[in-house]
Image (cartoon, rainbow, N blue to C red; front, side):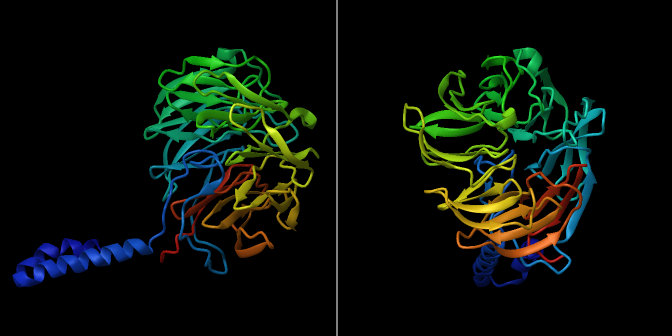
Length: 422
């Protein structure tokens, strides 16, 4: 907002006495620095669960002072049926949907909602006790966008233009069985590899060519996304397999350890949450949650296990010494150390959440957007608004002063929480 002042500096230099030139420049610099300090600390969200794989954004200073009608809607789009969340990188927002016969990958201008590019390919909607459609969220890394469809159709796009760099059928290339509800885990880019939750314990493709580098078994996979973590200084990848939690070496796929985790209907969908040497896991269908301690070079040790938190598909968060997540259709806060319930909120249905700046950003099942303190003592809403309708099972995304929400039928809305004047 100080562009005009800066651009007029040369004109003023000509008119000011020499002794004032340095002073003027210093004042402009001071004002610019002060202005920058007032702006939000913006951050991209280039993949499912964010840069740190934990559902927590480093963005700060965004506004919870919303007008009565809610935050201003910047744009709205329709992308087709599905549950893909939004990836935001380099001023563009990416998601996917299905129109009943084709999947489409969309790239929008993050500020205006204008379609930058889109790409469609044949894919059935595959409803199976739910609406069907796409499940995985695009991953953006080094000017490339990686996607996977439910039948294992993997694409690498130029992130700016949508040009297909390469495409593969993961099931066909590795022989891995397509899971009952389709492939759902988003791509993980690590070094020169793109890693997917496929087969018994993952598969990796060369990021430049799509060639299979390693794959583990031909069984059916779990539905979580692979995540990176350090185990005793060693880079590792963790994922929920069909009936266990598995850690592998990202370079070779070699199994490092496995912990049994069999759930009803073999639905391990929510991502594990890692904090230090501890890993929280949770699954629905009355299975429950557990906290594991992973020792260097050893198998995990069980710290506690109970049914206080049953993540159906929405992954939980760890903030401080608290766990926040959806126990089926109730939002709960648990004490991390013991697994005991600290509070329960029943008004949001089977929703989803992320966190930023010490606050929870929650999208209720019926489209109510709520911001609350990440407080261990009680559910403390700071702002709430009805921003979208329909069934909302997809996690909201905060990026660069905007919150993106979608519903099952494919409506996407982007609202302004930057706190800037219209």
